[in-house]
Amino acid sequence: MDGPMAVSALLSKLEIPRDTVLVIRDGTLVPGDAMLGPDDHIEIRPVISGGRS
Amino acid sequence: MKCRVCRGPAVVDVRRHNANFCEEHFLKLCRDQVEKAIHDHRMLEPGDRVLVAVSGGKDSLALWDILLQLGYETDGLYLGLGIGDYSSESGRFATGFAKERGLNLEEVDISSEYGFDIPGGSRAARRAPCSACGLTKRHLFDEAATRGSYDALATGHNLDDEAAVLLGNVLRWEHEYLGRQRPVLPAGDGFPKKIKPLVRLGEREMAAYCVLRGIDYMVEECPMAEGNRHLAYKEALNGIEDRSPGTKHSFYFGFQERTSVLFAGAGDSAGRPTRCDRCGAPGNSAVCAFCRLMERAGGRLPAAPEPVPVELGATRSNGQGSATT
Image (cartoon, rainbow over all chains, first blue to last red; front, side):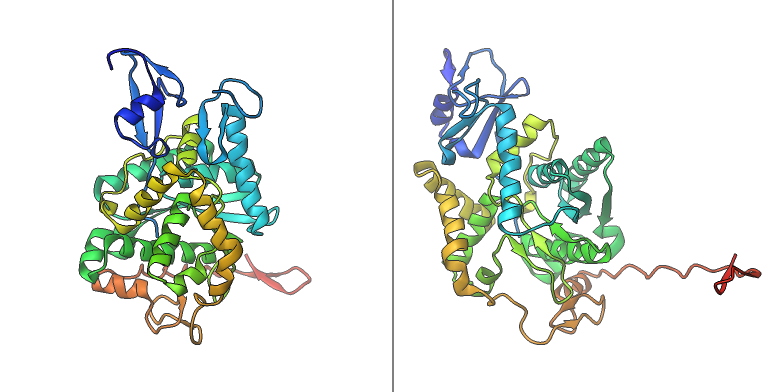
């Protein structure tokens, strides 16, 4: 990221559907309109599980 | 973003409800949705004993946590399926959850108790790994729930799971499976009652629930599920949901409310119920599918427990008959 960016904009840029991940910063959930800074360390955690029977 | 309930800062958005929630009200939403599912589908009565099928993933651990908060008496059952590091890691999350909360978790390692594992079993039986795994889990969870006289067996199937299964069943017009795709299956013919209390919650909500409740869970997906058909159905539905939030809910509950009656009875056991010659499980064939899979994979049923010797001593009268001491 070159500068501050909203979570939803980042996910769009990465072409990740918002409903398939959680964004976590410092162990805390980050909502879609939250702004991320260039120095933020975030986890984009997938939420889809398979193998259901 | 502001919480729809209290207007405080929101931490999570739920697009199909077109709403955002703070931590407190999101957790309440999850509990309320489970309570509504239990009530609407008559899954449980107050005081029921529930066996929770625990995988170490987000859904089953969130389910266990919510059922405890709702006051149900619960135990857990974890199956070690022998899928390498994935099984050992997921087992660690399941046991960690139970230990931290002082809960009773039964652990069954199929390699040591039944002499086979899922990778070997699926190869030997020429079944897809997810098929062999599902068959094994259903058999052993049913057996444990019946053995323990639980009122119900609860699994962590969520709305995404059920919508994806429904899509697959509709695409192939699997009328027998459609007949059994209900949030609750009553006990009968030797099978326990089975309930899916998470059907009103999506998997993103369950993951968010775990993060907010501080529940550590297995994030990585089972390596054997990669590329399976179920995930393809989920991806297709997620693409539609992205453009039209609420589609999965409408699809699944529309089926339940308006169409499932057309398939009622189609999934019920055909023919006279019988018992497996090997393990005694209910079914309608001489040898059940689990025992066939196990035998093809070179496994065996656990030995029956050795009889415990009873030491006889002098008898004494208690005025109401006799007893040994």
